[in-house]
Image (cartoon, rainbow, N blue to C red; front, side, top):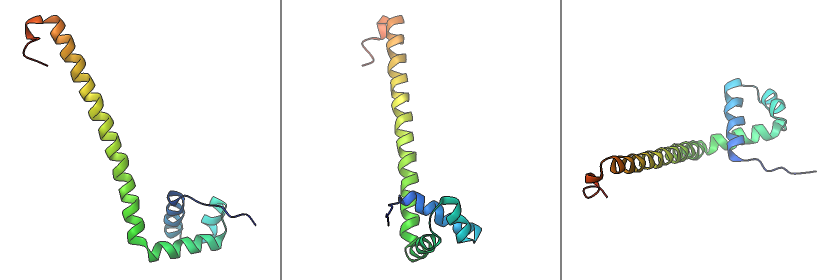
Length: 98
C-alpha cells in the first residue's frame, strides 16, 4: 500500500470544506482521499485548531508582506527613474538630490 504525503494547505482546505459541508465522505470523494483520512484530519484539526489557524494566518500575512515588499520596490524604482528624468531636464537640481 502506498502512503502519500499531503501538504498542510491541502489538509486545511479539506478539513474546512468537510466542516462546512458536514459530509466527510462527499468531501473525501471530491478530493480522492479515503474518508477515514478526512476524519483523522478533522480530529487533528480540532485538537490543534489554534495552531492550525495561527499557521494559516501566518501564511496569509507572509504572502501579504511579500506583495507589499514588491510594491515598495516598484515605487522606489519609479522614484529613482523620475528623479533621473528630472535631473536630465533640470541640470541645476543635480547638486540638491542624490
